[in-house]
Image (cartoon, rainbow over all chains, first blue to last red; front, top):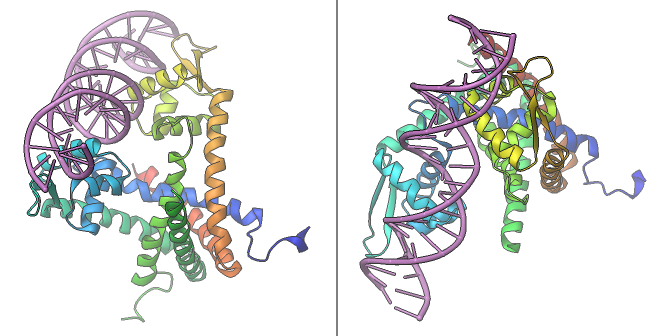
Length: 158
Length: 158
DNA sequence: TATTGTTATACTCTATAACTATA
DNA sequence: TATAGTTATAGAGTATAACAATA
């Protein structure tokens, strides 16, 4: 049985361990959202993240990035614009498109989240042995590459 | 500068790497929710997870586990009970308490999620080298312990 | 006519405050 | 009276469908 298994296939035990412990990481990751005031709902946070990374874009592009439909994205932008976290203006090239840009306040809000998350992770990493920390970095890095590959493959298929 | 730094303190680079690559893991983790039909909203899923692990409990206990207030939890249970994923009945000991229990359908829905997540993670782990996989398991395991410690400490403080 | 975006409408999720029933 | 839970009420988030404006 063992001999017939390909070398690169993970054994059941390691897959289970990863799933089990990954949950702790996800918990810590999501916790940051509870500690930034004034509270920004997760959806709004995702909009800001997309705009911060992708730069200004129109509504359709934003909706696509969010995996949402334009109407939902439009409503989200209503609230973000009202809160001053986002600029919404008619596009230069086409009068039927809007250009969405993250505002300086929006960027500041994002940075507040990042700071909490960095602090949380630093606290945890400090408790780990240097060896385990190095292993985590190495394993997570390759994991990250593999995730990108898998997501790109499934995106091509869809 | 280097000499004055404690041995167990992570360098900035490894902390950044972990934060950067952790995002890919979180993305993969959350993706499972998009692929189970009929779609169960994240909040309802969390209720089912809590009940599946903690066993039957009353509304206050559930709300506490969710980090929500009883009224929100009550409304959540309305929908879950209507969907047949949850049993809600007057407690045996006290007529003013309710006992919430996950139903067989609820457990089945949870298992559908777990299956998608297991498959997603297996796909990714297969792409990794055995060494990186072992490192990931090791690093993530110690990370998990450290998270538990940190969360318990901050819970005691609060 | 096709595309871009917004607006009705309806549902889930969440919280505050007011309420009912039990202990 | 204090506790357990539910029920208004209100606002955020999401989707379908109908709509306006531009290309």
